[in-house]
View (cartoon, rainbow, N blue to C red):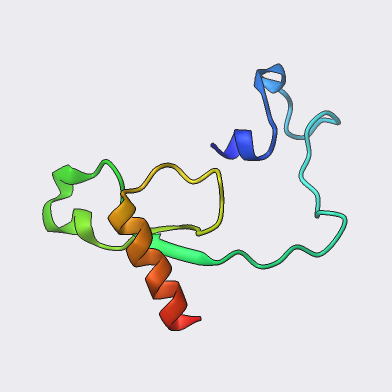
Length: 84
């Protein structure tokens, strides 16, 4: 998902991260700070009670966040409203 968000496709497979083809830079204009939400981690059911800990942090408004349950999203967004 990170590559999709940054519009990186397979044409850059094997690209030298110290080369001239791929780099990271600041956006040209100021961006709003993301609203950080948290939820239970996904795919760690084997962790027992620890699987329900809210140790998954994500940008609440991002289209690129992997799917969380609707309940987890609602809980995370309501926490943002309470703390925001």
